[in-house]
Amino acid sequence: GTWPAFWMLPEKEQLNWPLDGEIDIMEYVGYDPGWIHASVHTKAYNHTIGTQKTARKEVKTAETAFHIYAVEWTADYIKGFVDGVEYFRFNNDGAGNKETWPFNVPFYLKLNLAWGGNWGGAQGVDESKLPATYEIDYVRVYQKK
Image (cartoon, rainbow, N blue to C red; front, side, top):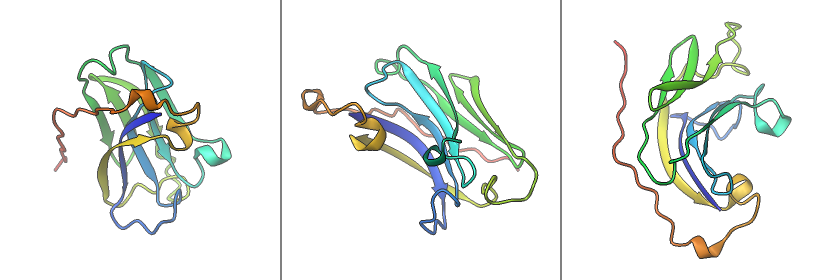
């Protein structure tokens, strides 16, 4: 039932998901051990309509060791990395359409551990796993000038 995540939403979110966009830097679900996920959600590309842009990568020590999860976000693309290796890329189609690229506004970072939910609890919730710990060593944010 665990579902830790590092993700981003628009600073001026209007509760209009997925039109406003979402960037998932790292998501992990306890029932799929050793696999991490990176995704973007937009009105045109999201899991509710089966068009989500996502990638997964095996990280066998995801539960036992620290790793470096990163996102590189430019006007042209969003890339996801783990331990310096790119495993996800979403390109701006250049159409100037918010439905496919709502990433032209400031976003804020969220770090959370969910228990259950529509993905973390999709295969049930094992109460014997409680209490659960989600350790984060550090967070860094850089911006190009």
